[in-house]
Amino acid sequence: MKMKQITLSILALAGMAASNMSTAASFQDETTSSATISFSSPSGPLTLKITPRSDLTSGIVEGGKRLASVSVKSSDNTQKLGVRWSPSNTNQVIDNYAVKVTNENGHILFARLNDGGLIQTPVGNDSYFVNLNGGAIATDIVTQEGSQEIMPGNYVVTLDASSYIA
Image (cartoon, rainbow, N blue to C red; front, top):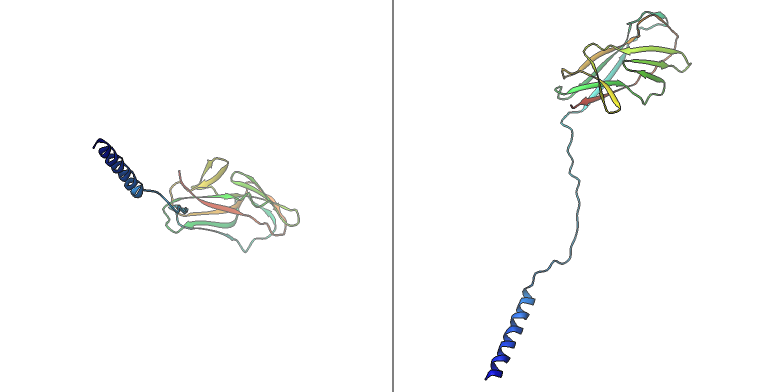
């Protein structure tokens, strides 16, 4: 009788173990997927327009003469915008608001941004002239103070524009 109870107990335990094995959970056929979650800037697209005057003639030119108008706009017109002389133009030597531009014949033009309403704003190694009031920028490229003799030729100026987020 005792042997029968032991045998039944062993069979019961074996049955329980077998049932636990058949219901044990497992993960099989694993697969992996990735996705890039992107956050765009809250600013809208920017437009930068440089409009040179068409009536310029070579010769002695007094300082402050308007050479071109500059406008920077964004689609939402609420953000702070900045403009700078672009370091990508190797014919421009930049000095804050001013620039020395060399034309195709090696002649030099000294110009500057009309800084009215723009504040030089450094961020890291970059420095832009920012309209701290927000909205569009409307300024001019003018000759530097003092007179200079400007030789005939084409002087290429290049600007960058950016939105400024403090």
